[in-house]
Length: 263
Ligand code: 2AM
Ligand code: CA
Image 1: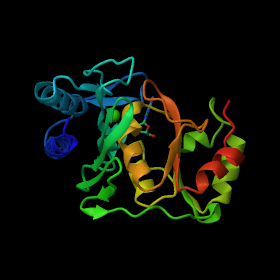
Image 2: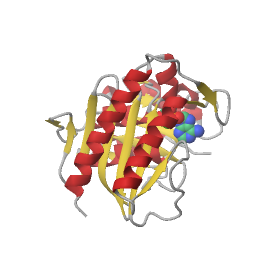
Image 3: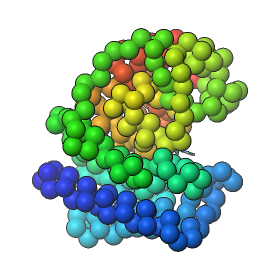
Image 4: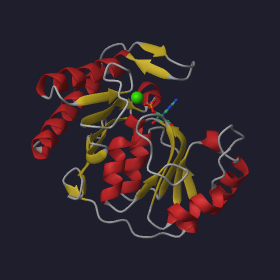
């Protein structure tokens, strides 16, 4: 297996898909809802997913591809080469804002993240990494993350976890958002992961994410020394949804120990 060739191939697919998405704004976009009225999908999510699947199946028939809209493979183990793809992470942003959404892709070999990509489509910014070879923002190498005290940290978190909810003790989350310098919510887990890895925010927390939301971002995060786990502090499960936290190295234990009480 030639990972360098797969890396070049994946980057060219991502750029081509990004172009398709940008052009799609010239046409009418069909919007549907999935599990509930606010869980949105468009014809573009599906078309971009099918574009990746057709190419990968043709050129790498032994690779598996696991993707949000369900046209890819269903897997019950992480054996072999698996592509975790979200064709549009941040579909609500895609529809409402026409920005702040990403193509998110992680390529794993026997469960180990080898290649990771987050493409901010409208900014034309590609965050990418290969295991043990460093992470990049376009052509710029991303430095190792330094420590930041919680009082100076900007935390990515969705307001739905700060109000009473079924997953986490929100009184503790209120303490956290009161203590840190500020909070942000970008509406795309992949972009928030890219922002932690590039030092624009200091942590990102979510109670429920899917493998395609985080698989690529985890590879990038690990290359800059960020800590990415579920909220039990374990490696995130990539065979189903899981909670998630990614932080600068010093903030992980502090936030998990003092501010996260799962229900
Ligand atoms: P999506 O836009 O691809 O659906 C929004 O806070 C972030 O959470 C986005 O990355 C969004 O991805 C993701 N998300 C929204 N609903 C989700 C769900 N039911 N399960 C997992 N991830 C979800
Ligand atoms: Ca999506």
